[in-house]
Length: 545
Image (cartoon, rainbow, N blue to C red):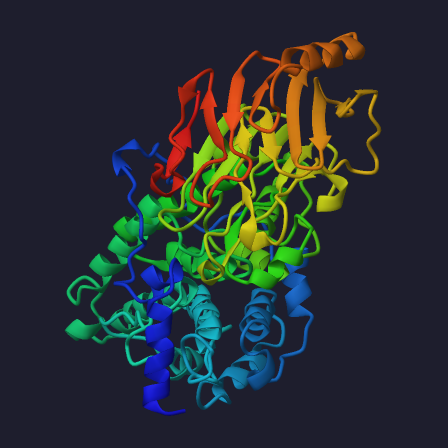
């Protein structure tokens, strides 16, 4: 491939919206948030020591320890280092693990994004877990022999020094590296430097304080805390951002770095708590457009980690689950744990109406929820190149269903690129398509285009209105006479154009634009009060009253 051809591709990409601002900018998130309005994270520093809530015979450790040491060039990316850690935690095949590491005379590939000009990339996936292995057994030479530790640090960990690698390999330093690769490589760089210093190398290039790397990494973490992640809710990439962040939190010797990691991890859990019900969520996300076809609610890496953490306390009555074990394993062997306040947020949903913004040329997340329900907006895709996947608006109930088709949901017409599924307000949602009624629900009353449903174990009714170009959904407190509830909502809305305006059971008059541009909130006004619809510039977190 010739250089002129490469330049043509890159210049074309620069002209594209959304992703171009990140991949071809200064590696800064493109946001216009008022940072002063961000609510403080609820975090504490209780768990800075090795947690004692699991033992070496934990089923997840056994799952990995019982596997054979794999082919380095095939399974080195994900499985190999996890298997080695688990075996050493159980004191199993110790000689074989050390021999396996010492036999690897060089990395199986190259660092950075695997793409046409870097075909053997992605080695940093291995490197970040090898880094965890090195530090996990640093003070246990009977398990990880001194010569093995040295080989790991000096041969198999390839990042060190003071210069973060922020550009994708072989992109002529034009295209920024993806977020998860930066986290994997730069946390490894930091921790390898720390290991070299502790093992006698006093040169400035390996001193994270003197060489400027700690200052850079602290600023990088603060940027993510303030503005959020470009690869928000990414599947599976968020797991490969979380895993090195957990490793850094566990092994850094810097109090400032540990606090910054804790703050960022806790912010991620708080935002998850807003956007999930019973550890099920279906938010819009960035990267991997083909994952639009996934209709289940257990694909999120953070879900796998949270199930693991919560399952460690039997009182939470949460099972770890059989999926996402590679991410759950990293959560188990790291020191971070959600504190008591976070656990309550996750398990006992509070009444909320919250918007999470992801900056310009992106999509917001909007949630209206309570103890036994969650209305989750699906967002909008500003352009295909944005790599944003928009989802339908979904109503989660306390019914433990695990797939979209078993939920009430609402989508816009046509293909995803045309969707604007931001039509969520408090206990209300609207789209330009009929409401999908799950097969297990039958209306207890219906008239004209209106239907009334009674969810089990819920203290509210669900009201829907559907025609070929409009779908409305309301939640209203349950009453003794369902027919009366239906008659009242029909009477309130009888004279209205329901494609533009609706009156809720709480007597709020809501106006909306069902075919709104993809950079505008579908909801226009409430009780004649105009709303700020330009969601590109919303605050990072907006909590509505």
